[in-house]
Length: 167
Image 1 (cartoon, rainbow, N blue to C red):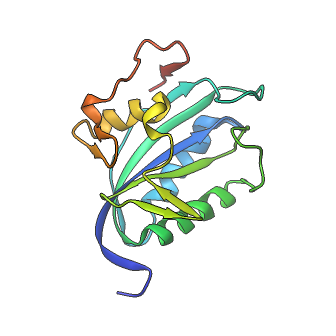
Image 2: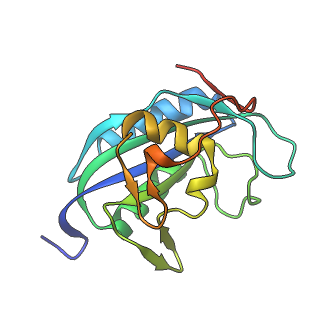
């Protein structure tokens, strides 16, 4: 193993898009994720439509979550995620909570807790975002989120008008 690899870990990745045919952007990202080195897709959620967060007027988002087993380190996986974003036209420096061609977030990496300048795991705010919790619960209902607890015990407002199942 090289320095970018470590033991097999299960990681969860959040996907979001609200520009340039968001459903197609998410589907293309799924294909890229399936081709990552040392990585195997375990499950992928349905697609969800959700209202944007923040105060910028923009189209609704399409969101999903995918789980993978990987030998990549968290840092190497993050670099691959950012490469996928760039390959689909994402540029950094966009407004926080602004429109995105593609946003790939490393939500969880095994039971690791990482607090580096470039990566925080579990992803900040994971427990307050239905557009993450609903697809995550769909593919991993028994998941335990570090510093948050069992996913099955998290309050998820399934009647929230701002999120709906697409597929």
